Amino acid sequence: MSDHHVRRIVTGHDDQGRAIFLEDGPVPRVQRIGGEHGPLFFEVWNTRETPARIEPASGEPDEDGIQLAPPKGGTRIRVLDIPPDGDRLDDVTPEEARAHFAEVGAVEASSHSGKGSRHAHMHRTETVDYGIVLEGELTLILDEGETTCRAGDIIVQRGTNHGWANRSDANCRIAFILIDGQYAGGLE
Image (cartoon, rainbow, N blue to C red; front, side, top):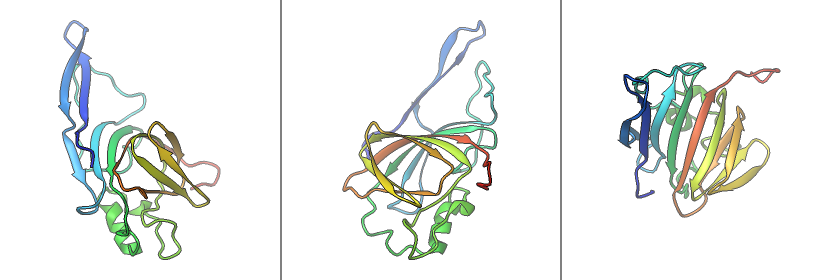
């Protein structure tokens, strides 16, 4: 895992409308999902509406636990530390995959169907996600094809069924900005 935490700096306004720092410190919500070898989620911030409300000194809206998708009509930013897959995902059953996604409130997102699945954690959410690889590398797996994403690469993930495989021997750190979406044109 990366040896540094994620720092969150939050700005706001004082009583005179001047720009000020409200927070500067480690991300307050950090949780490992899927057991001791699962990804580490650093939840940075969420919004509950678009356009996002900008108030003088409001904090992040309260949220219980870690949720995979952003709030309805909102956004989410998180950083993930994803360890190497190794062989630990080789024999994951569809039930175990659903349990993994249940930990982040998204059991319905799991699309792992057994031995024919391209990756144990294939999933689909009704979101547009911007992924920015910060360090290491990940392989993005789709129903048709895959590509390796390295530090500096930016992925625009548009509600497609996908999985992330860390086939390297090092941690991958990736930032995601997730935007609530709505399927159109029969994609539901």
